[in-house]
Length: 101
Image (cartoon, rainbow, N blue to C red; front, side, top):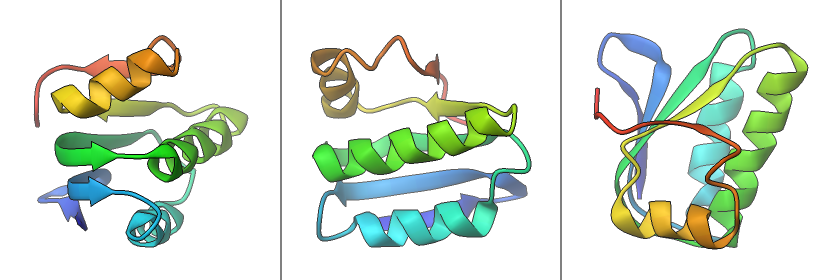
């Protein structure tokens, strides 16, 4: 898995590969670096697998952003990721932008 800031957009993280208990630490580190001072976008189009660790990290960031009056936007979640959010009834919690940046 890899996490990087989108080129020219410090408020967007691009995540690729498997997002699970073994790799979620990298995402959490980048989330902390971004902070909660503005809206955050996470491009999930390249995520091939996500487990409950990934969901937990995304929900935590969303909670922190909401407390500060900001929003988390999920960008172009891959089919497996979108299905996971649907199965966990979280799909309605997030604003989902279907178009990759």
